[in-house]
Amino acid sequence: MSDNQDEVKNDDVKVFVGDSSGPDEYTCFFEDDGETGYFYVSDRKKEEIVQHLQIYTNSAKLGVDEKDVEVAWSRDGKKCGVWIWGGLRGIIDLANKREGRVFLENRNTPPIDDPEWLNGFEYTSRLSESCCCKGGSLPFRTRRARRKSP
Picture 1 (cartoon, rainbow, N blue to C red):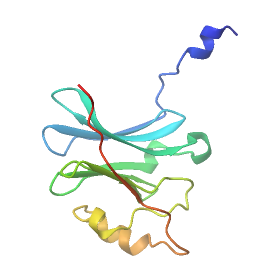
Picture 2 (cartoon, helix red, strand yellow):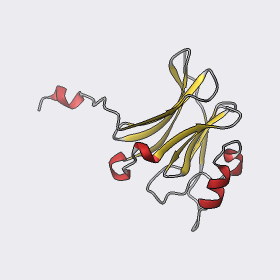
Picture 3 (tube, one colour):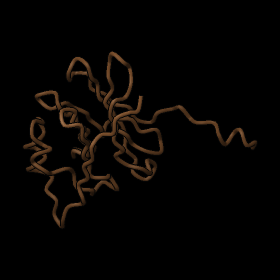
Picture 4 (cartoon, helix red, strand yellow):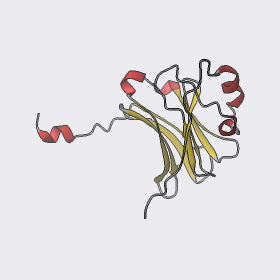
């Protein structure tokens, strides 16, 4: 195997799920490239990613399939979220330029359960009732989105 072969990237995407039913200017999608899982918001007109959030690493160990993933917008179109195995795993809040997640480590990783973040999603009551975090929650991480430099 030559050194050049080590640099060749596999462009095959294992999982790709999107939702374009949100605001006219944006679309959101989730991608698993076989190594990591990322959640994105893209500007339709500029055709570029405006915010992104890593949801997990170690794709092979987790075994997430397309049927396990759903993405959706909040009712007001200001936030989008990614659900994996029925639990909300990541949210991008466009209005406040921030992202939130509970890093997915395995099927038992508790989903996001913070009412402020869940507010506006149709799945709030289902998640609140069926996905409580017995035995303690994992840390819920939020961060401000970084603006791209010109």
